[in-house]
Length: 117
Image (cartoon, rainbow, N blue to C red):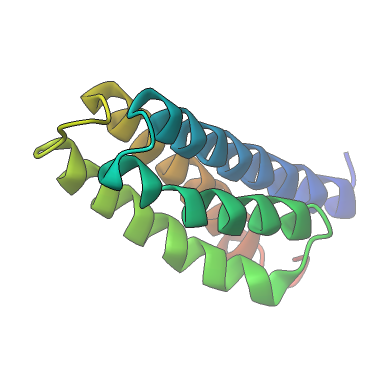
């Protein structure tokens, strides 16, 4: 694998994890019956779908922003799992896992070998 395809592979992994997190946000909203707690998740679905689509293009500047957003999302969903009412705890934990996986993938592509990214 050459350097460019390795970089693209990491962006693809990050985009896949972000898309999975978006799907889990949508699942949480549906399972909650679109209660207040579930409706809060819907704007994140839209944002994460846009992030996933743009990460596929390998936009480095976006990678830094999404890296930060994924850590904020992971921590936020972990905290929300402690007070979950309408959205099941497993949804919040799965969101946290996907967000951390996306952040790790972005870390690798952005900081492991910055000259290639």
